[in-house]
Length: 220
View 1 (cartoon, rainbow, N blue to C red):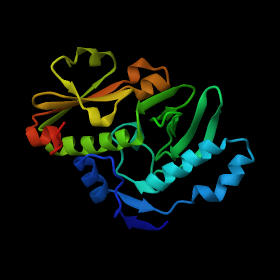
View 2: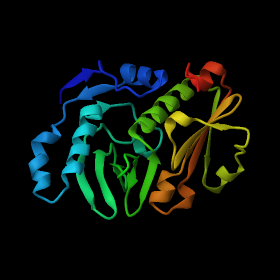
View 3: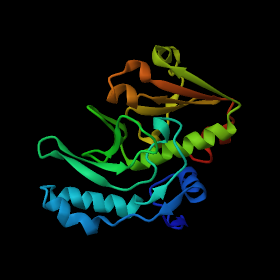
View 4: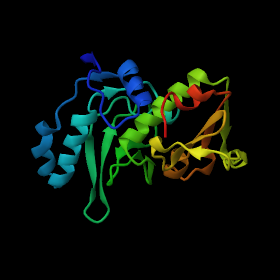
C-alpha cells in the first residue's frame, strides 16, 4: 500500500478541520471507480449512482484519518464500493471498509449523508464533511479539555443542553455536538438507531475549555 501526505485538502471544511486533515491525514492508493464502472452498470446499478461514487472518490478517495472515538474507529479510509438500493428507496454505497469487526457498514446515503447501515439506516451527519468535522472537533476537544466524562444509555437524558448551542459545522443527524460556556458535548446515537438498541447511546462531555478549546479559531 502506497502512502502520501495530504497536499490537497478538500474545500468546504472549517480551518480547524483543514488543519486536522493536513496534519493527521494521509492518502493511500485506491482503485479508480472508472475502472469498475461497466461492471456495476452490467449489474443494473444506475449510471447516476456510479457517477456519485466516482465523484465521492475524486474528492475523498484514499483519505485515511485517525480513528474516531466511537464506531470502533469508523472507516479505515474512504473508498466507495458495494452500491445497493432501488429506484423507489434510493441508493447507498459503501464509504470505506471498517477498521474492526462491527455489525454494520459505513455508507453514503441517497442524499449524500454519512452513516451506518445494518438492518436499519442511521445517517450520522448530513454530509461527509460533517463526519470529518466531527473527527476534527473530537481530536481538538480531547487535547484541550481538563476533564472528559462518558455518559451512556438513559443517563444521557440527564444532560441539560438547554443552555448549549448546536455546533452547526458537524451537520449532525443521529450524532450531534453542542457548545456551552466552557464545555462541548458530543452525543452519539447512531448505533442505538441502526441496531435498535437504545442503551447503545453514548455522550462525551469535554469540560474546562477556554475560548480556543471551545472553537479552535472557528467562528460561527
